[in-house]
Length: 390
Image (cartoon, rainbow, N blue to C red; front, side, top):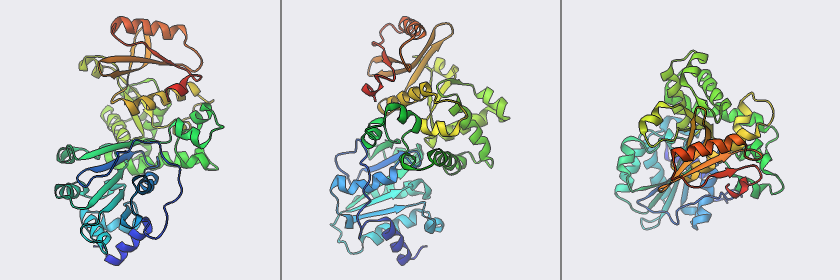
C-alpha cells in the first residue's frame, strides 16, 4: 500500500490546490447543469481527445473551489503497484484531511479503467452518498458493462468526448477552411505540433498497444494494426471479415474480435446495413469509419487528399453524436444511400458528395424511397453546404 506522504505528493502534482488550472480552449460539450453525490459523471472517449483537459475546466464551469477538488491520473507510473480499489479509499481519506464532513469534496479520476475493481468501490460510494462528488474518465466504451451497468442504473450520466468538432476547430482557427479540417482532423495537440502526421501515427500505435491489445490478449500488436489499417483504408465501403482474414492470415473470429476491441477503444465505429429486420441486418457486411479524418490520413497509404472520404467520415461522426445508431443502405443495381438515421418514427436518408449530387445519388434515393415510402426528405451534404449540418 502506498504511503500517505507519497500519495499526497501525487495528488498535489495532479490537483490545483496551490496553482491555477492551465488556460485551455473551452470544449463545446453539453455538460449536466450540476454534479450530484449520488450520480457519477463518466466522460468516455478515444485517447488524446481532450478528456483530461476537460476535467481541468470543470471547476470553473461549475464554480467549484479548487481547494476542494482532487485530481488523479491513474496512468501515473508512481501508482503502478497500487492500482486497486484500496487506493481510491486512500485518496478520499487523504483529500478530506482538513475538511469537515459537511464540506463537499470533488474527485476527478482520469483513466479509471486502470484501477482494479473500481466499479464495485464506486457502487458502494453511491449507495451511501455523503459530500463526495465523482467525475471519471476512461478510454473504453465498455466502462459501463456487466454488473456495473446494472448497479448504476439511473445513477450515472455518460458523456462521450470526441476530438474537436469543426465548430471547435473553426473557433480556434477562424481563417482556415473546412478542407483544412478534413485533412488535419480534430485531435487537439497535433493541430499546433510541428510534425502532426508523426504524432498522429504515435497516437494510433498507442491506442493499439494500450487500449486494444489488452482486450484481445494478443501478443502480436502488428496484426491488430494491420487489420485496423485495412479498415481505415476502406473507410465508407462494406468490410468483409473473410477477405481481411484471407489477407492477414487470421481467422474470421480473430478479425471480428480485433475490430470489436478497436470499437471499444473508440478507434473506429461500425455502420450497419439499414433494414427493419434484424436478420437482414445481420446477413449484410458492415461499413466502418475511423474516429478522425486526420488520424486516417496519417496511417493509411492513400495518395492525394481523399477529401470525399474525409467528408463522408465527418458526416458519419456528426450523426453519431446525435443518434444512437447510424446505418447505410445499398442494393445491387440500385445504388447506395450513404447514411440512414431514425429520428423517432422518421427515417432520414443522407447522401454525401464533395461537389454536387450525381445521377447515381438520385437513382439510389429513388430505389430507397420505393423500399421505404414513408421516409423523410433526403439530406444532400456537399463541401459547400456541410457547415449547415456540422
